[in-house]
Amino acid sequence: MAEEIFVSPKKKGKIAVFVSGRGSNFMAIHDAILANKINADIAVVFSNKEEAPGLKIAQQRNLETLYLNPKLYADRDEYDKEIIKELKKREVDLVCLAGYMRILTPLFCKEFKNRMMNIHPALLPSFPGLHVQKKAIEWGVKYSGATVHFVTAEVDMGPIIIQAVVPILQDDTEDSLADRILKEEHKIYPEAVRLFFEGNLEVRGRRVFIKSSECGDTQPTTRSK
Ligand code: GAR
Image (cartoon, rainbow, N blue to C red; front, side, top):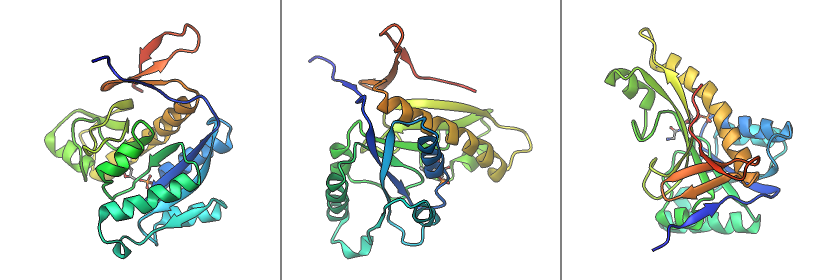
């Protein structure tokens, strides 16, 4: 069977950003849009947490926000179906998970295949899951970093778009490492979104390539500091 190839659309896009917490990655993406670095608008900032600081910041920035209470839905599929309905209404092209701490159903992941990104504070596939800065220090690895990847039903395992490497210092604490990784997150997440709407991301199986506009060729998208 021929390999399935996906090329991201070159267009002015509509983004939905999903947050559950403080929302600094959401702000980095929004700031890049305001600076005309990303050819897209944020159609909605969505949260599963009514009190998420990221949601409040979105309101202050005059963006549309949406909160759906998970407790009001029979199960995860029903909840995710409702989100899909809301995103379709707004003709969302790309979902950006930015500290969204609720696992999405296979149904949702299928609906947004190749159209949903996540940022993770480690060099995947090492250290998936939670508290990964602490796990990286305790494991004794010398480098960690940040990963932007497309989301698939297998948590933290989708095709990798960009990674940034951050050295682990001998006196690092969980917080000091998290701070340095976060600075990189704020660079590579907007960059991945920019490339997406420039029509410059190509997914072939597990690999993501940046299409070079100069020569029409493709290059792997691994980047270090
Ligand atoms: C970020 O460090 C992000 O990488 C991480 O949560 C933080 C959210 O911060 N995401 C995950 O761990 C997902 N597995 P933010 O709300 O300030 O963007």
